[in-house]
Image (cartoon, rainbow, N blue to C red; front, side):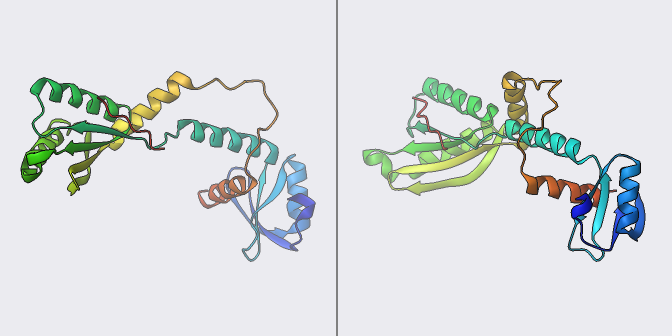
Length: 215
């Protein structure tokens, strides 16, 4: 950055992303000083290296805010578990389906386990039909990520929320728990220098498992 740049000439990009062209380093530094900006090397491996005129302190600050917001909006993938019996009572089925619906709406995946006991193990089609019924009744919220398969005495199927459902859950979580940024804070939060450099280059180019039984 600035006087630390060692190339004799650079390909200069203006503060708005406009291409200035190849100029001597001294000329690029003078242009940066004239507009009170920094000369930042954004593609050092290019020949000649690419440099951009920018307010580097402001750029780092804004990059840190974006990174913080992205981390806040991230939601860990959580897999809930719901256990059913192949001959489940209709009322119990509706109750457990309600839990599955709630989990999917929250953006979580659901592992649905059919537990066979005794002679039920000779009738796997009962569990298969039950899983397919559940799949058809939650189709607006999710889809089958892992098809039903036998696992010892159990039959397992994994449901995942549709992308739009999960995005809605993430947005709702962020709006409920996100603390407001301090408007007057001029100090730049700690930011990853590598990520900042990556975002600068991009600007030039453009112009857990928490299981519950649900019982």
